[in-house]
Amino acid sequence: MAAQTGAVLLLVGLLALATMASSNTEGDILYSQRQVWKDPNNVLTSWDPTLVNPCTWFHVTCNLDNSVTRVDLGNAGISGTLIPQLGQLKNLQYLELYGNNMSGPIPTTLGNLTRLVSLDLYDNHLTGVIPSSLGAVGTLRFLRLHGNKLAGSIPASLGRLTKLVKLELQENMLSGTVPLEILSLVLVGDLTELNVAKNNLAGTVISSKPRVATVIHDTLKTTS
Image (cartoon, rainbow, N blue to C red; front, side, top):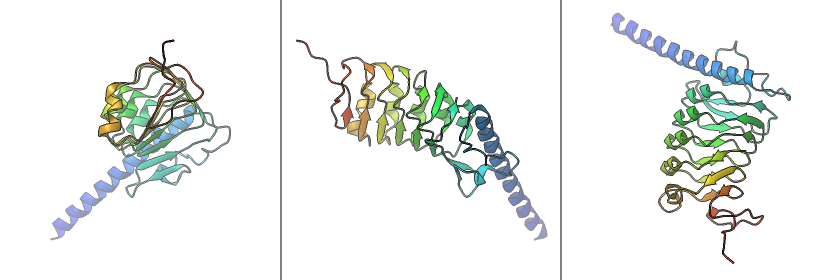
């Protein structure tokens, strides 16, 4: 009996250590991200790497296992790039970084965030392409990347996001066409809004009055 009790206590101890190690790792990742950013409004002063885990930091939310589930830094005045290590926050559900001065590419590693529900990176200065790896995040419901400087084509892989409710890609520099795989989400998925207005997509021209419906795009080209 004593041996069994000892084994149980050992197992509980090991699980606690594993949870603590995971929390410390996530804290290291977020602190590394802080080091890359410029924070003129000092909204990240609570991000102290000497604490046991990041769950007491402002703008960070954790679950009962002290694992990060939310990062809320919308309209925080932060500038800088996104580090690839963000893709290691395995329980992250909400990454809210809209309305800042973020630059550089969207890390392809964000496609590893298999529990992500909302990715809000809109109204920044992000460049490069939309990573096709985001099509692997089957839990994603809100993908809002509008108001950046993203170029290239819209990945057809986003058509695998059958739980997606809003896909907002307007006001970028995207080219090519809207993949049929994505358009089909209006019929077979949960998609209620697809906004691709004010890009360089084939079949449309820039318009100050885009058609507003389930699919929002620029005025169709006509022959005259």
